[in-house]
Image (tube, rainbow, N blue to C red):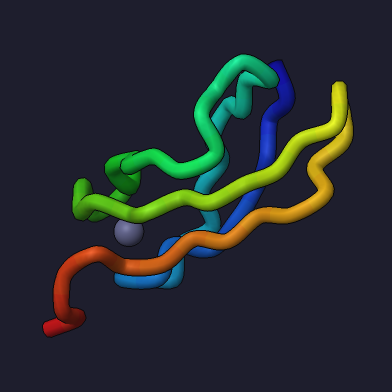
Length: 61
Ligand SMILES: [Zn+2]
């Protein structure tokens, strides 16, 4: 498991999540601060994060 830090696209808090090599590349994760769903797209090579993108799946109010 890799702990990866990124900025929530809703509340701009810095949050972390655990990435698993076995995880699918696209999935939904709730922000631990504002609890809104974030669409995560990532690509891993073993322990390395090659690509990571977090975007909102609902309109930002
Ligand atoms: Zn948030």
